[in-house]
Image: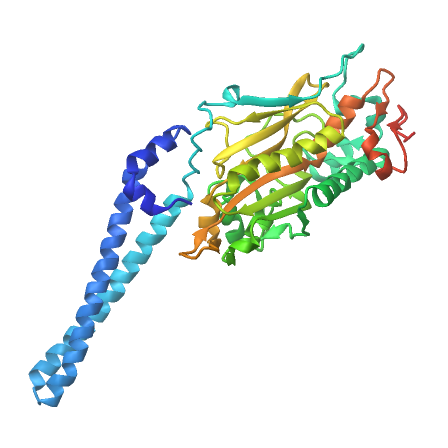
Length: 430
């Protein structure tokens, strides 16, 4: 959420920053609501002062026996009481209207984010590894002979509908091994704290990270009012929600392996084959909470945490900075790590690492006390996949496929697979 004082002080600058994201100016509409809200609050304060003055004068009128003045003042107090109640209700309604408006405005892009309308304007900043030169036509993951036995779309559709997957045998074990491999690297080598989090959260928890109210259609809600998390970013970031921590507590770096749930509303016809885009999937999510001075460097550190997993798996990737038109709602700058998929002949996103500044912190009221003293400040939050487990499985399968339909597995996974180094065309480990 945005600081209303910033919009008051620099409305043109605010609208200009929003325009970079393709949004129409909103400062005038926001400030109109804010002005009315402040008028109501000020009028209620004046009425309260007048009521207090009349209440004080009642005693004096009674002590001197001035019954007429006593009755007049009693009437004034009663009238002011009703006036104050009305003004406070109106101020509360205006405050709710302002908050609802502000909750629907996306974060402002950082000054060094490239301008653009869509992914065609994203800027590649580095790449690692070279796609293999194959002497056969590479297959998409779900059509590789070694994979067919363990990846069952038809049974999943019978159980749950489209965009669900049933994994079994070697493929299920490989999927599980990848998640454990990621968690181990993030905790033991990258210094993150592993957290086991709920995947059902309250509405205010979703509001805190920006999924609600604007993107309710993208998530699932239970009949009891809980929301299924679209990513562990939601509960992990909210760990500091509503708290004031000492600066010595920061930076805080969390990771969690969870099931994730997305309705994929509006994505019909996109990536429906295989398990590239699912309603239910797994991710190892990273979240950092820092001081404002540390967040820029933390974005680079978290991006390396994601990239290092792919390097250990020997999978080519490239890293891009998203342009203003391709960033997520809560982000002020995002690095996408895109993995090479031979079956598609393209790089596809496997991790988005974003710095959100104080945007989420304001929504969840997460602050810190500076070690040097002074007033409390809002923390900065960051999040990113380290990595999406299903998409990493796809990348391992497609990059490891061989002409006979088998799959060569990365050597870094051998200890997680009982020493196995390949999946045969029959679907069995070898």
